[in-house]
Image (cartoon, rainbow, N blue to C red):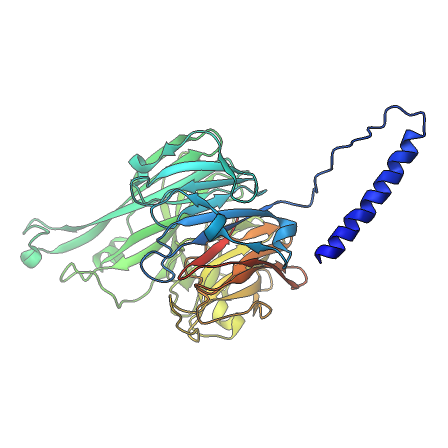
Amino acid sequence: MQFNLFNLRSFSAVLLMAGLMSSCSSDDDSVNPNPEPEPNPESRWITVAAARMGDNPGDGNGGTLIYSVTSEEAKDPTVSIEPFDNGFIVPSNRTARLQSSEDGSTIFNISYAGDTGGNYTKYNVEGGQDFAQAGSEISIAPYVGAAPRWIKLFDGDQTGAAVYISTENEFDDNGTPEDATDDTYLRTDAQMAIVTLDLVDSQILEFQEHNIPLTPELEAQGYYISRIDMPVLNEAGDKLYIGARLSKVDPATGERERDYEILGSKTIVLDYPSLLNPTVITSEVGHGNTNGYRSINAFLVNGSVYQANQGDPEGSHILKIDADNEYDDSYDFNLDEALGVDDAYILAWRPAENGKAVVAYRHAGSAEGVAGAQGYFALVDLEARTAERIDEIPYDPDFYLFQYQGFVVDGSEIYVTQAPVGENGNIYVIDTETGDVTQGAELVNTEGSHFIGVF
């Protein structure tokens, strides 16, 4: 392939020289004999993110490294990418929480935990291991702690939103929480903090704190919101949706329960940009959590927000929130039914503008690998409510997607990474219109480590 590429360039050079000789023989002095090469308007940066092993294979706690290539290189199976040897180390005590600009030219990071936890930085992508810090660093730790959950809103790379929730069991006056023998459990207080961040000028825009109650009936049973994540704007830009996880304590003891009835999926709705007037909406279709984990869990597509849920007893659903800021319970998209599996669990996903999406998932039939359950990719049609496993991508018991973070959407194409823990793999590009899959550049791995996506 290198030989063919050389011949093509040589042939192009001959044509260019012939053109220049012809130009020099003319009387037109306006012709530039040394024209600058034209950039390829179809190309963009693709940044590969790799998570190094800490203590255990696949834990990703040894730090995050990134390395960028052009989209042409990303699609080229003769290209090898070695971020563990040559990558840029992203500041973060544990796996970095990365986002990228829509065109791939900028990487945004908020460090997770440790001395630098909560620090926001952004970098201009310059190719390879070259990432130049742009603007100033700012800490959001005073607002949402050193391990915030954050996301870049889809508003033209203008704004980020980070959230945090703290909980405390409340008892009556018969005793103290330290000695709950004679106490009567009342409820669990869930206190939410949210901050919005100007990604362009690196400054805080708005900060609010709210108590997020459930109904008195649910609170008396011990239910409460225990984790929140993945804010997304509605189409009007006046409401912010925040995914939520419910947990439960035993009212008789105040101790957390592990086996309890899973309620309808819930989302917190706030006014935007003020971040005021929180309400909670509930799905009658899906059950389980909507906060996701490491990857964006809700997206605006064709005027509605589509949101994945996790831990649903009937298998993960993709839920729909319409312009009225309520769940559309007529939209029933169950991944178990669509894929013909049991206990499907959406680990991460990303739609293109055409309403087709790539979903990373596991299910009850997944093999148990070195770091957890085996993962798969599926091509999903949001309108038709269909899903099909992408069999052109190879799967291995050690192909671990629980920590997966990043997909690149370029028109109708979606880029993903595939590599078992500690083994080499490849970039794959899925054409969501045709279903065609292209094997791209090789990803060179290292012992116990894995890839967490592209940006």
